[in-house]
Image (tube, rainbow, N blue to C red; front, side, top):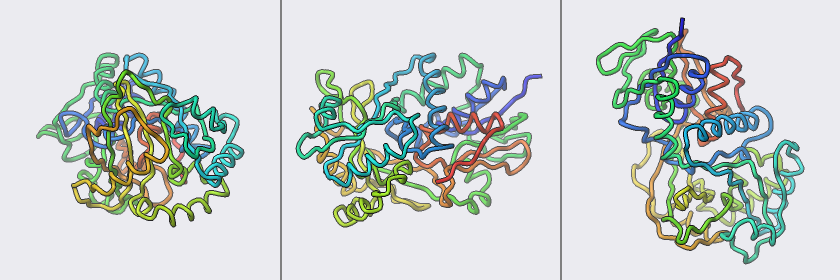
Length: 379
């Protein structure tokens, strides 16, 4: 007999869980409280970012997730670009961290240190003044999160017969049933893949979990004229201090100390700056990191200005007209774990707390959870 599953949440984690369940032959229904996904899953760069993950479980998960992404994107006809990434160095200590990272990384990673000339040949958007070189990785891929998160449900419905119930908030889980919209929906397994629903359905567990929330601010430049391309996704030196993968570099501690003295406001707001370009030629810029459980709903102009000022130190574009600004909020673990996977009762699984790595890790993580070989990631 075919097993059934209910997935609560149609963001990236919910879609990844749904995909993994479909691959195992489950009949799946997805309950989403909004008319479409409007949370953190569409408020990001669309970067699939293995370079940010440390060696071992997390890097392997990121590479597996990307393989699943590629299969799905090709079959669904969704735009994507294996852009790779460039981290620029304008100071010797930045270049030292990059060189140490390459030396400490496994040969399975596609990494190289580029000269100034090689870097400029990779991207016309890199600022040449003072450039020493760059770290290049070919692992990174770009999707447009707004297009992908909107299109994947259509693909899953057509290929696997998944039923999506939009504008339907789950209000109670009483296994094997979920109460939503005044009705009871039953299934063999229930997956809760939305931060908001976890907080609502299991408030005590949520309060006791080692979770906080992170608010980020981002911007978007209009489509670049004459189909002008930036090539790889671009990063400044501050990104070296943000991603756990770079902690293998012994010189990172000293670099962080210099940044703390040189960029105190950037550190205060958790700013590191990156730029990626989607299929329409638009350039997404960000971001900041502000932690807490409740946030001011308004964007801070100073944060956007700091982001743009730092961006100008390593990149330039044909057009810098800002077409959109926004903020996003996602749950993040506080205990060194990279995600929260728990089963409050038999048959119910909660997947939460991926921080800013949902696009990079969700497909790999959910495959592990659904297939029963999940190993907790730690940083």
